[in-house]
Image (cartoon, rainbow, N blue to C red; front, top):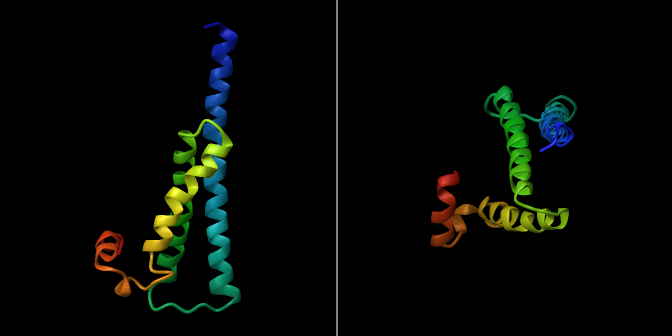
Length: 117
């Protein structure tokens, strides 16, 4: 490997790390802004701690970003990365209780989703 190729490899790897860090920062800012609007401007009232809700929103945003980067690492093209998303998002959507309440799910699906409660 020539010195130029080695330098290019270091730049690409460093650029990926910087992009990951910037993406995580954007996710944190987005979750914080959404929480500020919900609690500050719209007057959202929760029974528990507001700080805990904000912390959960921020961690959810960062974990979602990490999951997307993890899956994109297995894709060789952008089209493949887009094709991975339904395989990951659809089960989460179906098992979260948004479409059908979890108590009313079939016993097999309720058993699959119960560890995520």
